[in-house]
Length: 295
Image (cartoon, rainbow, N blue to C red; front, top):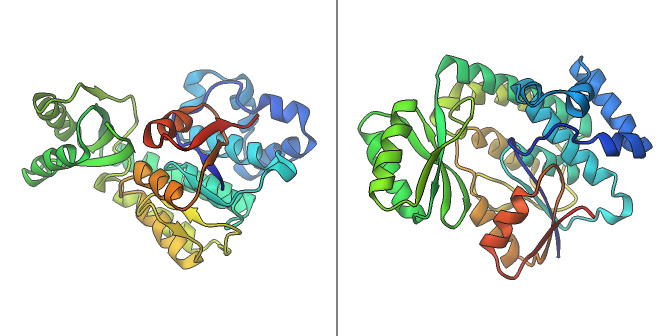
């Protein structure tokens, strides 16, 4: 079965989407529609901007979303997903690709999400770190101990076996990095991020996003969408909306998502969007699955 997957924030690069814009009338039309919706020319930043310009929250999330969705839609008849999934932000791309959200509504929600997250980051500073080569249970146990002692610290992204990203207060993450290294982690790497994504510190953003989601029309997707919060397939619009809201403060269960997709018959994964991060993670999660980008 064919599965299509969509990357999250961090996959962006200057020049992304320029070839699509120049070679596909459909891509050009969609990019120009995005410029109108956002009220600024995001294409100028994507194609010719600096890395710093592209790292602005109001740019990064819509840029990755646009590249991912337009890449998929420009495949034409070759785009026949039997299931979709996206990593964090990529879940919005997966929902548009599956027909649960219109292109316009997906972009508006991604922009609302980006701005709400930026505000939450400024209100309550936080950070994240990648933990390499420790079992999931051990990482969760250490995070639980630090949270119980009063600092915010949670397992945010289960990316693949032996790679978990933790999220929380600066103090909580610093303590966790020390404790996890002492527990045998090969590496505990602080990440250059603007805040504590997928942690309780995103609660204010969650409330803002929920209001925007409740005003948006969702449709029954044409194929199951495996969502981050429970790694399970969903087709019911009400469930999809609730899971999207919960996602901002919940863990991204990517390892379990890919395992469940494979168990349900996925053997061919196509990553739509910038970079090859998900292809690398899928190769570490499943020996049977074939993962590639759009050829």
